Structures are given as structure tokens and as C-alpha cells.
Length: 308
Image (cartoon, rainbow, N blue to C red; front, side, top):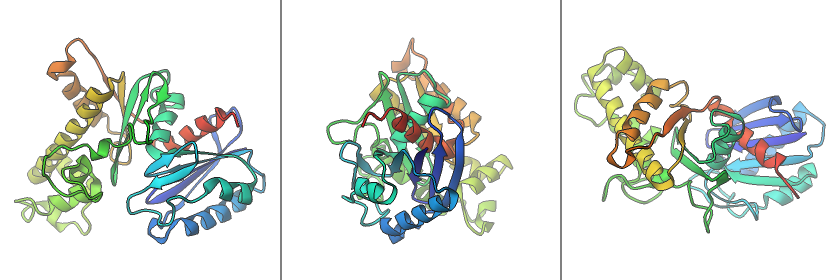
């Protein structure tokens, strides 16, 4: 049995696979409570796994947000999630708890690997991903290999590409990051401050969410439509930066906001291919088939390729 664990900031997703088979034997999702630290998360993960199976895994895969040293199996740095996780010895925990080897990966890297190995981009050797959710996650595959760089930051920092010089402060501490404008929490907060919000139907929402903004726009709320267009403008800037940086065959959209959003993919594809430097080039924009479990599928690929 191969066991994949995706430590997301909101939920922890688990999936067990039989070697050589794509479909999961079982899946599980539990709240992360990431503000309470990594140790409580590991205890609850262990409890849930033992409730599902007494079978010892042959190998385990773990994905985490932040900068992951995939060789030493350490989380180097993470922004405001899973305190005490930085430098934690995950291999020691895995060996002690389950008695098996471990592979580790950044969550966006794993998600992209999952889609190129088993999902919407099978066979693509050059691809980038942008995950649209609470934050903005990115990753890149070049010539069939995940891009990592000398400090494990290559490809995954697209959410912190600067789209506005001396712009809004990001939760990472820098200024003008894409995530500071298009991350779900930051964007919904900014919508409340836009002129016209009080007159919009959005002002009657108990809790303003990305879903409610898109829904109001679809129902004809003019203010909501303006906000959606503003958001798409941020996405266009972020996607174009990825395309210019990595020259992919395709861009893959993932995350809760992208789920089932063929219209958004079409908008971004038309925008990218209409740019001056894209003459004679065609880049497709795809939507992840199952964004909730792209990460665990990517971990499955890493476990299948594990050589010890």
C-alpha cells in the first residue's frame, strides 16, 4: 500500500493506493487546524489512518505548503501555517510511526506532477500550474522534470511575482505580490473597500466569499461583474508571467476557484495567445480534472518512482 498525505492549510487529505493502480483504495479529508502546529496534525493523521487500515504502508508521500527540501525531506520555510514544522524530521516520524520510507514534495509541485502523470495534461513535457485558492500556488515542469532550482524555490514562487511596484503589502511581508491582490482572503477584503460595495447585493452577504462574488456577477450585479473582471486581470498578469518565464505547452488551473471553470480557462487562453510575444505560438489552458486530489496523485507518482 502507498499512502499519500496532503497537508493543506485548511484540510488534510489522505489517499491510499495499491501499487500500480491509479484509483485510490480509500480517501479521507480532515480539518488541518494548521494554526495549532504540525504535531497535532500528525497525531490526528495517525489516528485516522489506523482507523481506516491496519495494513502497514510500503511507502508514504507527504506534501506541504512552503519551501520543501525534497532530498533531505525537510520543510525549510512556510508562511503562517503549521508552526514548529520547519526543520521537523518527517522521515524519523514516518519510520517510527509506520516503519516505511518517505518522499516529500511542495504541494503545488505535487499537484502539477499529478496532472501531468494521471490528469488533464498526460503526456505534456512542459507545463505550468496556477492554483487559485486562499493563496496563489504555482509550479513548473520543464522537459518532463519538476523545476526545483538551487534552493527549491524555482517554479513555486509565482504567487509572489510582483504585479504592482510598491503595491499592497502581502502576507509574506513583501509588496505588490500577485497573492496580495488575487488570493481569496485578500481579494474579498478589497472588494468591501471598493466604491459601490454598499449599493451592491454583495453588501447583504453574511460572509463574503469568492463563490458569492462570482454568483452575484452571474445574476447581473454590475458591481460584482466589475470585481470579477478586476480579479481576472490579476490572473491574466500571473499566468502571462508564468508563460514568459517557462515557455510551456499548457497552463493548468487548479484550486477551488478554478474547479469546473472552463469559461475562465478560455478567457486566459485567449489573453495569453493574443500577446505580442506569442506570435506563432499556441499555449492551451486546461482545468485540473480533480483539483481536490491532484496533490495526492502527484505523491503517488513520486512513490511509484521511488528508488530508495
